[in-house]
Image 1: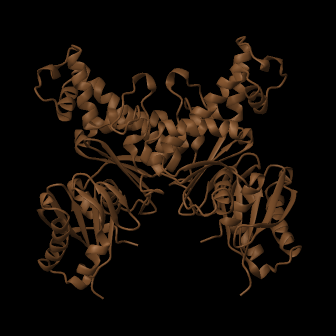
Image 2: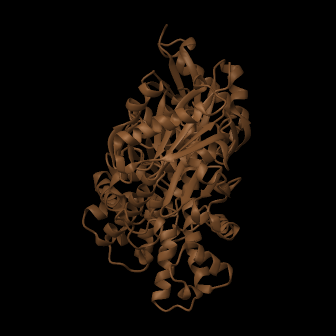
Image 3: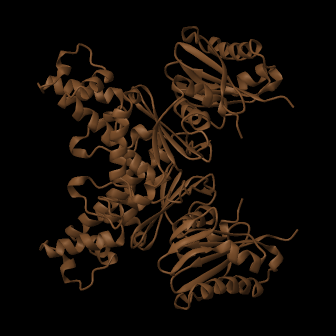
Length: 315
Length: 315
C-alpha cells in the first residue's frame, strides 16, 4: 500500500497555512493563503477546504493517500466534537468543523487548539521526537502550553489542560493581575508582554538602564541589554527565567515529563535564557524528579502548528 | 464466558492485604496475612503468592477467572518492568516481581506505587467512578498523589509523576525545608506532620491555644480545637487548606481534571476542611479551569489500595 500522508491546517487571523506531513512527521510541502476573516464564516471554511485540496493536488501525492485533515486554531473549542465554540480573532462562533469539512473532503477532520498542536508538532517531529512525555511552553504575547503524554495531547475535562501561562507562581507580595483576572500567573512575568512591562516599569521609576533610551521597548531589546551587561535588564531576564524554571519544577513533580520544550519569540534569546532556566530548575526540583529531564529549545518554529495539526490524525 | 476477576495486593510493612474485584471494581472478598518483613525477601514473595491463591480458593470463583494480579507497594519502582528497586520499609532491593510471581501463579502480574494504586482505586470504583480524569491527594504522614487521565495512571518518565506533596507552593518567606531537601513543599503544611508541627510551634512560642494542654498533639486534636473555635487551631487548619486549594488551582490549569479526590487520615476532618479548600480553589482558579470541577472526599478508605492494585490489570 502507498504511503499515508497527513494534512495539517494552521488557521491564523490573516493567513491559513496548510502542510503535508509524511508518516514520520516530516513537513514535505506547505501552502499559505489568505484567511479572509472579514468575509465571514462561510468564506473561511471554504478557504480551508480549498487549500487542503490544493496542496495535495499540487504535490506528488494522491488524495487517496490522505489519512485525514487536522486543524489548529486559537479559541474556545469543544475538541471531542470538533466544535469551535468561539474564536475571537476569526469571528467564529459554534462552528462544527468536521460537519462542514468531512462531506466536502471525504476525510476525517480533527481540531485542537493552537498551543496543543504546536506541542504535538514538536513532540512528534521536533525537539521531542522519540520522547513520549513532553511539556511545551510557547513564550509569546502570553505563555502558551501543551502537554504530551504517551504521544497524545492531554486536553483535560473541558479542554483547558496545558494552560501553563496561568500557573500562579509569583508570590502575592510581588504579584500583579493577569489578563485572566487572577493574580501572579506565570505569563505576567515570563511572556514578551511581561518582560516589556517590567522594562517599562523600570524606566518609568528612573532605574539606571540603557533601556531608557529605547523608544518602543521589545522583549529582544531587554535580552540584548542584558547580554551587554545592563544590570536592570539582567534582573528582568533572571526574573522571567526564575519563574519559568520554578513552574517547570512544579510540573516535574506533577507529570514527571522527560523533556521541557520551549519555543516562541522569547525563546529566541537562546542559551542566555535557557541556562538560567536550567539552573533554577536544578536548584528547586527534588532530585528524583529531575533525573534525565531536559529543557531544550523548540526546533520547528512557525511550522510546529501545521505539523502538530497533521499529527492529530495519528492513532 | 464466565466473569473475569481481578486480584489486588496491597503490601504494607506488617500485613499484606489481598482482595478480589469483579469487573465493576467492586471488592467482593478480602484477606489479610502477615508480611513477615523480618523473614526476608523470599518469605515476603512467597506470602504474596500464597495469599493470592488462597483468597481465590476460598471464594466462589475459579482460578481460571483471574485476569491477573496487581500489586501496590511503597518505594522506588521500575514500573514498566515490575521491579521493586528499593522498598525501605520492606527491605526489598531489585526484586523483579513478575519474574517471581508469574511462573508461580500463571497470571500477568503488574506493580505500581501505593499512592498511584490508591488513586486508581478511587477513580475506578470510588469517588471518581465514571469520571475519566481525576487527581487524588492522600493526606497522611506526607501528602501522596496519583493522577488518572482517561482511566489510566500517569506514571511519568521515571515513575515520579503525581508527587503532589512536593509541589513547592509555600512562598519563600514562610517556607520550611521538606524531607525531600527542598523548601516549601505542600506536605510541609498540609500533611498530618505539617499540621502537628505548626501546632507545636504555636504552643512553643506561647500562642494562646487550647492545644497547649494536649500532651501528644495529633492532627485530629488540631481539627477538634478549630471546630471548637480555637483561633490558633483555626489559623493552622486554614493554612493547610489554603495551600491544598492553591495546589489544586495549579493542577487545574495544567491538567484540568474533572474531579479532585482527597483521602487519608487528615481528610477525615470532613466538610470543615473541604469547604475551606473549595473556597480557596474557587478564588484562585481561572473561571474556565474550574467549571464543573469538584473537590470530594475519597470513599474507599483503606480499601483503595487493594482495589486500585486489582485495577492495574484493566486495559
